[in-house]
Image: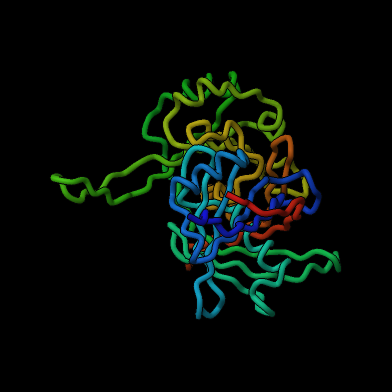
Length: 306
């Protein structure tokens, strides 16, 4: 009996929110066809095999205008509802390899709705280009507890000046019980006293795991005279990421928070991880959307044979 050979899956490894290789945040971008027949177990196993901050999978949706792809994101241990840097990596791979012809716009059908990415010219470079992504805003609210000692311990004693949280409503269905709505804390935003304190503190990952929320975003305003408006670092050990290098989706809530504090809607943000990265952020209050703009670099390409 002939052995069934699966069709190879093309992939690109991309550094996002940077114009230099080995900086920014890493993502593997895998292109599937409708006849690939890869189930969720395979997708998660492949993400674990790459063992990068994010691995994403795209399937083209025929007949759509602008061109549209189904997009899913996975860490090494879980599927994500939204991811900024892997979306940027996906758009970069599509535009760099002319996968949507002459179109400068691509849409992604995701667990967070339709996300749009646009290719923009870069006045400072003839060889690279910018990508602007349209994401939903994530609103912040006051932290429900006045006790912030758990966060101070997790951040190795750093001085905390504010704590905010984000809430998400989800519809859950369970057999015999039926559908019901639950509210979860997705993000905790911890604001420190200075830019230097964000960059210099040493996180205690075992204590971050004990904190509420799926992720912890640590941030501070930039000093006077800086080309940036604020910096941030993100920790998500519950999702398999002790520290994420540059988290684009975190800026959907950081834009909301800093807009209230600074009374402005346009920011230049710095991701203060070891690999570092930069983003331009625009908060559209009327439409309740956040535009994230950055660059990306392809560092590797190949084929998955299994």
